[in-house]
Amino acid sequence: MKNLFLIIALVSVSFLSAQAFEGKGDQKFQVGVNFQNDGTGINVAYDYGIGENISIGFSSTYLLGVEEIFDADFGDRFDLKARFNANIGNVLAIDENFDLYPGLSLGLKNFGGHLGARYFFTEGFGLYTELNVPFAEYGSDLTPAEEYHNQFSVNFGAVFNL
Image 1 (spheres, rainbow, N blue to C red):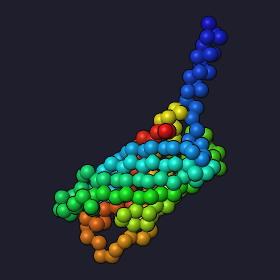
Image 2 (cartoon, rainbow, N blue to C red):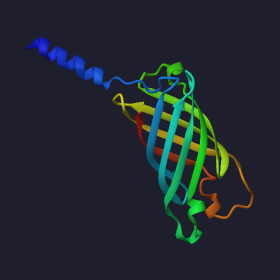
Image 3 (cartoon, one colour):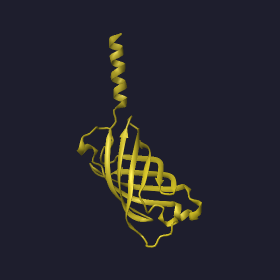
């Protein structure tokens, strides 16, 4: 009976083991919620590993809940970004299930940066969060609706290994 319990325990622990970023060829898909001043929406992202600690991809956000007084149309609510990440979780050696990734993004609204973190509970599922900030906006004297995606925002949700 002890041996059976030991085997079950070892197998269970092996299912909990996951690696947050595996390097070249690694693929991640993220879906979550986006929070920013006067708006909330849905965020999706895809990252592809092109090196041991480098990934590229895209991120898109569509704001579902916005302040009606700003009269935000589809163009104001939608953003699409190309992104570059430096996946440094293995460099920090905190936990093999954890990845920290600072990065840059070039989008329809601005040039910006992000700081993200992922933690995997299983081989294919984890949680992520990202802090996003614009460095340069593509215009000046923005209307309140144009301020969407041109301000600090936070993303939080689920991440999947593909």
